[in-house]
Amino acid sequence: MRLYTAPDHGVVGHVATAISAAGGIVTAIDVAESSHERLVVDVSCSAADADHAVELQDSVRGVDGVEIHKVSDRTFLLHLGGKIEVTSKVPLKTRDDLSLAYTPGVGRVSRALAENPEDVRRLTIKGNSVAVVTDGSAVLGLGNIGPGAALPVMEGKCALFKRFADIDAWPICLDSQDTDEIVRAVQLIAPGFGGINLEDIAAPRCFEIERRLRETLDIPVFHDDQHGTAIVVLAALTNALRVVGKELEQVRVVVAGAGAAGSAIVSLLLAAGVPDVVVWDREGCLAAGDDLSPAKAELAGRTNPRNVRGDLRAGLAGADVFIGVSGPGVLKPEWIAEMAAEPVVFALANPDPEVDPASADRYAAVVASGRSDYPNQINNVLAFPGVFRGLLDARAHEVTTEMMLRAADAIAHVVRDEELNPNFIIPSVFHPGVSEAVASAIRG
Image (cartoon, rainbow, N blue to C red; front, top):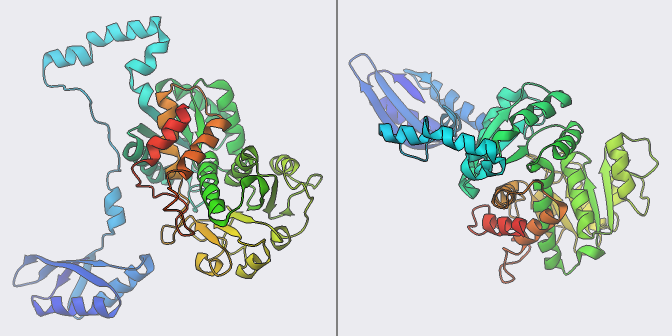
C-alpha cells in the first residue's frame, strides 16, 4: 500500500499496529518521500487471501491521518506486461550477422526448405515450438470468460513449457467458440508449430475439435485438460494401488464427471486394463440405453459392466477407487466407509474438491487432490512438458494411447519403492527427473 500520511513518523507505527491487529504480517515499511506537509509511505504486508487483503486496507484507513493512495497485489505485479517474451538465439550485432540471420542469407534457407519441406523442423523454430490454443470457454474453475481473460493462463502454460522442457510455446487465444472456425484457424497456423496443445476448451466441443485436427494435421494434437490429466491420474493411481496392495486389473473405479477430463481418464483406465469403471454425472450413474447426450451415451457404452444405477453413493458401494473431476462437495466423507477395504480417493475438482481431503483421510487409505496445500497433488505439469519434449524430439506426427500409457508408467516409477507411502504417491513437479523420464517414454 502506498500511503499519504500526516508529517508525523509516529503514524508509521500506528499503521504497523493496525495491520498486525487485523491479522496481517508487515514485511517492509519504507518512507518514500518526506516533507513538512506529508509523508509518502510504502507498506508491504502479507494477507491470507484477497478478502483478508481488503480487511487490512480497511484497518489502515481507520488510522487517523492516513490516506491510501494506491494498493498493489504481488500477483498482479508479476503479470504486468505479460510473463513471456521472444529472444534471439543468434547474435545480431554486425552487418554480417544480419546478412546471415536475415537477407540475403535467409533466402538460401527458404529456397532449400521449399525443395525439401521435411527439413522445416530441423532448420526453424517449428522443431521446438508448440501452440497453446484456447477459445476461453472453460478456463480453470472460472468457466467461459473469453479469450482475453484466458491469456494470462495461456502465458503461464507457455512459461511452464519453457521451464520444465525448454520448449518455446506461444499462447493462441481465438475470438471464436465456433467449432469450424477454431479447427480452420488452427489448421492455418499449424505450419509454424511442431505441436498443438489445446487448452481450456469446453466439452463436448473440445472432443470434435481434437478429433478433426488429429485427422487433418501432420503434427501431434494434445488436449491437456483431457490427456494430461488422464496420464497423471493413471500414474498416481498406479502408485496408490501399490500402497494398498491391489492391481489395476482387479479394481472397481467410480469416476465422477463425464466432461473432457472424465472421458479421457476413463479411456486411459480402460486401456490400462481396469475392468470395471462406472461414470457418475448429473444424470446419475451412466448406463447403456439411458437417454443421454451422444458423448455420454458413447461413454456409457464402454463402461458400467454391472449396469449400476442410481446416485453417486450407489455407484461407490464396494468400489476400490473414487476419481472426481466434477464439482465441490458431491462426495460425503461417510460414503467412503461403504467402499471396499483400503479405498483410494482422488478428489480433483479445483479449487474446491468433491470432498475435503482432510475429512476423506479419516476413511480412505490414500487421498489425492488437485490442491497444492495437501499431499499428493495431481498436477498436469508432471505430464505435458515431457510429453511434448518427447514428441518434438521424435518428430512425431501424432500422440498415441500407447505413448500415454508409457508416460503414466514413467511418472509413477519416478517414485522409488523406498519413497512410496500414502502421502507420497506422485513426484513433485520440481523433481528434476520427471520431464526427461516422460520424454524418454514418449520417444519409446
